[in-house]
Image (cartoon, rainbow, N blue to C red):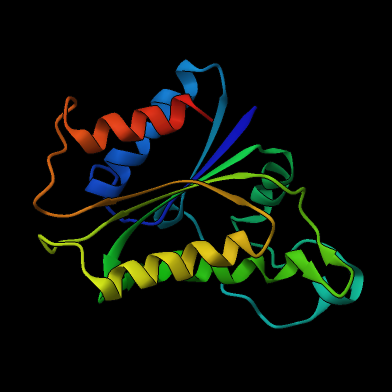
Amino acid sequence: MKVVAVFGSPHKNGPSATIANEVLRGAREAGHEVVEYHLNDLNVKGCQACGTCKKNKVDCIVQDDLAPYWKDLHECGALVLAAPNYCSQVSGPMITYMNRHYCLITADGVRVHPGIKLVGVFAQGAKDRYESAEKAYDWFLKDFQNRDMVLHAKIVHTSADSLEADGEIMQNAYAAGKSL
């Protein structure tokens, strides 16, 4: 199975990326193919509200570095999304990325195969998980669930949580990837 991972942090060794990489390690060890997209390294534009996707029932036509992603998305069985928390919300690049999925819903329904497993990995600087951040993570994931994806795991890291290999979060991340 193909697993697509989208990283929304500018820090490739930051908490959300570190945890997501552990999910991917589990996926690879389970025999899955992994394709990664690091938004900070890509030229990704926001939705242009051109309506071409709705009118022609096609993927987003914006020509940027996200163009190859659409083929991978249609082929994948799992989507791993990793984002830091900025100002009580997922990072801006991840929201821009999320908005580009507007093309997947038409009057006839969803244009991506149902049942793609969804793993959300979020990291916040606060020591305690707090309600507004949880609502933001759930809101973000719900947009993908509205496209017939199925939540497989949601992992939230706080600054009080260990990123050691034998720590609970890292073990949960590996298990989430292994069980895809």
